[in-house]
Amino acid sequence: MAKKTTHRSFNDVLAILGGQKFDVAPANEGAKRTPNAFQVRKYGCAAEIAAAPDGSVEILARPGWVLNGEIARLLDRGYQKFFKTSKLEIPASADHLRAIHDFSEELNEATGGTTLYNESLGTTSNVYNYDRVKGQK
Figure (cartoon, rainbow, N blue to C red):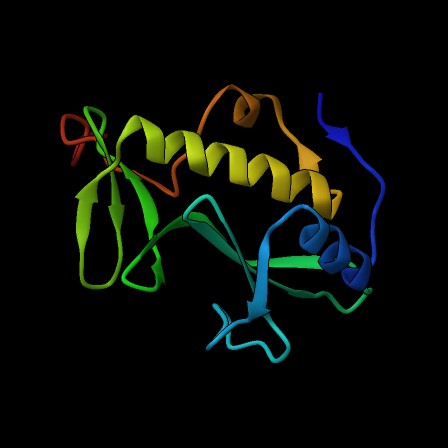
């Protein structure tokens, strides 16, 4: 069952994140090129957020590890997780995954987002790409 916390305004979330020692700065380009988007960083991870039309928080770029200034996607190939950017791909270590998990939980709590059981067990990937089931129906 999903656990939902109270909805907070975008300005309240920015204040909470600043109080929890997140680095909050305007996003350079924004994932969806949204004006007034902010990038929040902590533990070597980052995500991009902006104000939704209803005044709440919209997550533009999911939390990921920062590689060469870019938020990397987490790719699961069944035997190993990798971080992938537009120019680089590296294997993910247990410390990286722990940092993303902690970052995601703290960001979710600050924004008043929905907490899901499967996400509380560990880090979820952006992409699942198993080579043994590729092309099978």
